[in-house]
Amino acid sequence: MTRATRFGVITIVVGIAVLGLKYLAYRLTGSIALYSDALESIINVATAVITVVALSVSAMPADANHPYGHNKAEYLSAVLESTLIVFAALTILREAYQGFMNPRPLDAPVLGMAINLGATLINGAWGTLLMRYGRRWHSPALVADGRHLWTDVVSSIGVVIGVALVALTGWTRLDSIIAGLVALHILWSGWQLMRDSVGGLMDEALPREIVDGVRQIIRDHGTGALQAHTLRSRRSGPRVFIEFNLVVPGAMSVGAAHAICDRLEAAIHGYIEGSSIVIHIEPEQQAVASPEVRIS
Image (cartoon, rainbow, N blue to C red; front, side):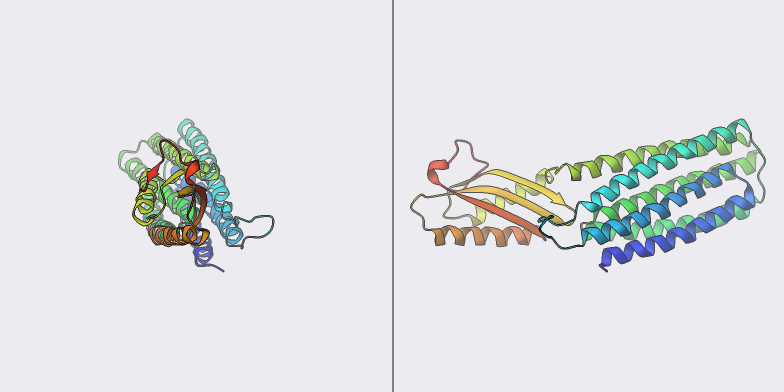
């Protein structure tokens, strides 16, 4: 079991504990907003299970049918998570509408808010850890899970504010209004997560500043070559793939050209940990008029 998968298993345990606390808060108060918050926690548990499965698949080594590995399973997990987030938001909107049309007074709001806030603190702390280590390990599934938990934190804070205002003002419909506004925020977060995940599935290029850094490395460490062109990059989970054509003098020996490639690969590996690099050597007759990198 990888370290990322272990984090995913702990997320399931945390999600079940938070779900229990939030459902208890709903049962004590009868608040439609707290009920909606508990509904979202069910989605948290489901997505945590999906994440563990995706991380287990992505950790499998490359094989004959998947020579580039199984890393994109994490992006599929993130897309599914974003879909579930959108579903949770729509469910909350439905419950908010029903609560608005049929308002009811709250029971034990202070105790319910205290329990809900305790669950929110747990979610916030764990979500922060997931995003921190997900970015460090280049795990989109962990980052997605962390973002989802923080979406839950934001919605929970909104729910508690709504319950507090209902208790202070006696305006029971405000409970459902706050829940509806929070659902719209969740809907937007789900869309952002889906957009980022689809970018990974579509082999979106690395950020411009990273690609510019690779170009500078080629200039600094490609001495002996003439130019580089057709630079392409993509990320697949924790792995980064970089390819480019390197033009060398026609009279250069294979050994000398290979030595330049080794030097460039070592420098790029130092710049981007876990990168996989493919360099295609071309004679100077293949030089282009406007190369991406001019070395000499």
